[in-house]
Amino acid sequence: MPPAIEAARWVVAGLFAIVLLIASVSDIRYRRIPNWCVLVLLALFIPWIFVGPQVSVLPAVVAFAIFFAVGVVLYAFGIWGAGDSKLIAAVALFVGWNRLLQFLFVTAVAGGVLALAIIVLHAPRVRAMLNMRAAGASERNVPYGVAIAAGAALAVFSGLV
Image 1 (cartoon, rainbow, N blue to C red):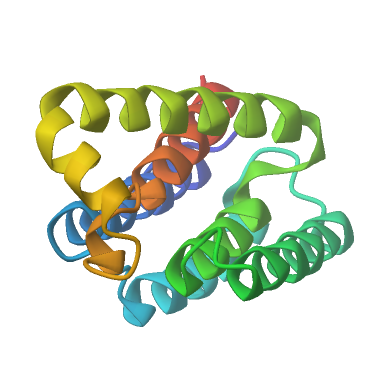
Image 2 (image 1 turned 180 degrees about the vertical axis):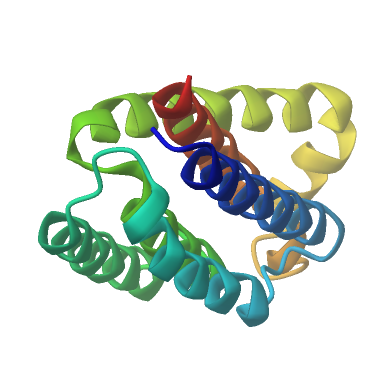
């Protein structure tokens, strides 16, 4: 592989990681994933097509569509936030079919660990919030964007090494 392509690949992957980090911090602090983060990820997919390892555009777009549709359904039922739905669809473009199961597994495990950590660290608050069903809805959820970012970073970066 030419050194210029390899350097470009790492630049795009680095920007991908930075955007995921910003989305994660925002999700932890505000329980919101900024739309601009998702838009930047979508824009980064264009150079990724040319420099990413074994990128196939049609399966990536199909994965995006499937994840977006599932995310919309999960959002409609109140299981996920809108930002989580958009973020998982955007990162599905980068993950690729061959790392899709790895991505989903790491995302699920990271989400479970994150949920357990929240319960352990904030046990009295969690009990109080569970007893008050209508109050504090935005604070009862898990910042699942962090788990999505962890799964995406592992899947994408394991494909680069």
